[in-house]
Image (tube, rainbow, N blue to C red; front, side, top):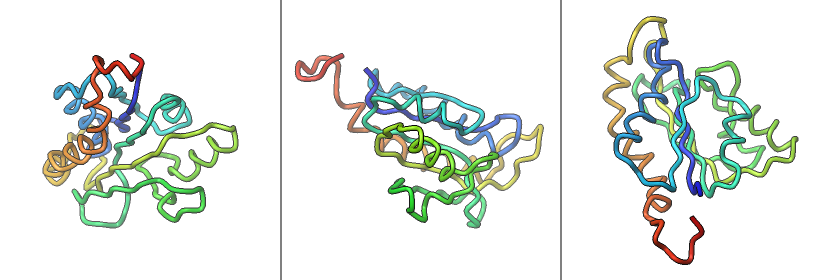
Length: 163
C-alpha cells in the first residue's frame, strides 16, 4: 500500500530541468521504506496526479520559475483551486494550477499536495545540473524526507495498518 507518493519531474538532458529526477534518484538510494512510492516523470500532467490516488500525501519535485536567484528552494502547500500559490509556472508546458483544475473537473480527489521546487539557472540541452542547483539538492532532499517521514515510519509490521 502506498502512503506517500513522491514524483520527481524533469528532463535530465535539459540542464537544471533534471532537478526533480535527480532528487527522486537520491531519495530512492536512501530507501525511505515500502510506504513511499518514488516516481520519475519527464512532464507534469494528469497522470502524475492519477498516480497518487489512494495516497495520504503527494510530493512533487520540479524546477520552478519563481523569479528568485538560481538554486533557491520553493516549498508550497497546495490549497484550494483559487489559492495564489497554484499559479506556479513549472519549467514545463503547463503550470500546476491548470493540472489541478483539470483533475478537479474530472472528479479526481487529491491527497494533500506539496511542491518542492528549485529555481533553475540553466535548462540548456546537453548540460547537467548547474552548480547552484547541485548546491540546493541536499536541502531539497531533506525537505522531501521531512514531508514523507510520517509515511516512512509506518512500518509494515503495524497490525493496525493494512499492507
